[in-house]
Image (cartoon, rainbow, N blue to C red):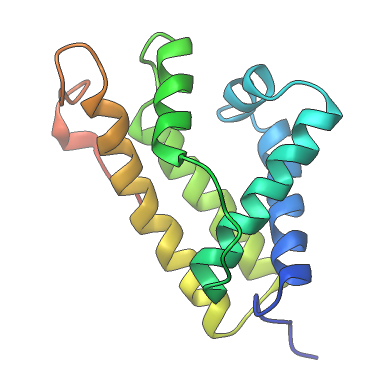
Amino acid sequence: MSKPDLDNRDNIEKVVRTFYALVRKDDVLGPFFNASIQGEEAWEEHFQLLISFWELNLLEVSGFNGNPAQAHQGVDKKFKNSITTAHFDKWVKLWTTTIDEGFEGPMAEKAKTRASNMAKGMYKKVLDKRPGGFILPGGASGISLG
């Protein structure tokens, strides 16, 4: 029995909800998300935003209205500039694992590749907004980002 692809909104919704159920419980990522998104109504809004985000990125369906860089920069500021490559690496790992466990096909592969590329770009955007600009905490040697 083959797994479905991420080729429609319903399947994108399934992967987003499954993924964020893991994120909310995760020791590394959970504190950031749970402090930033409080209450089930706020989580539902976040789910709908991210479902539309991935629908745009995978299926080129318009409907996403947000600014991911600004959101991540705000969280980093709220947490005293403490987001590191380890956070983005964990995010990519959980995303990839979630997809691999429930989905397969061209769009599933595209979602994994896009997530890895987005993590790299988003981390740079987070660093760019920090006081002092693009400074790599601990040096560049520890960067893996997917």
